[in-house]
Length: 225
Image (cartoon, rainbow, N blue to C red):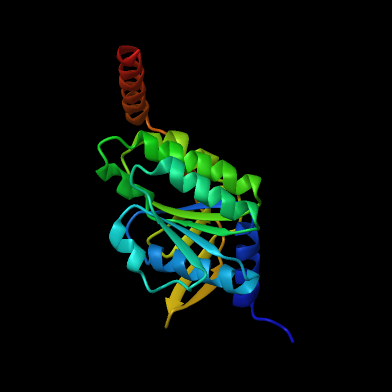
């Protein structure tokens, strides 16, 4: 039986995500969290793999959007313990890792340990051939996120006002819509690659802020010796 263009686009898009790490960057909501949740559930159901959720807010643990095959971790200064538990799970087989909005890390006074946690999790995900999906706001002002995390995701996507998914790595633009909880995708012609390149790179001001943060961290390290 033949499949529709929408179904073919969805198949191709999900195939690009499997076994890799992907970050979805949004300007405003544009159904970003709903989009990522649907994608996660689609891969979980099709591949029959367990899900690991990384939460920055304890209230997120009560979400009803995920199946009983989901293990949720509230990350609050328990970095080493969480990583040990997650790595044990990954070592038993492929998993789908869903990371809560990285932009929320801005609320932490010192986000560096969280960034380090995610950096290690990225590496472990690739090591065990698992799929990792994360979201972050385009307005996220933490230069550590842009410098030490976003470049290391295998796939980078920008969600635009026209509800188009633009790929950092040349995959055709995809227009999306969500109706009654179902995701529809349609391939679009690419028009402006410069925009997404700007999103995934540091501005001069962000580079200065990053240098300041690194300098302060080094000074803290020296004074602790």
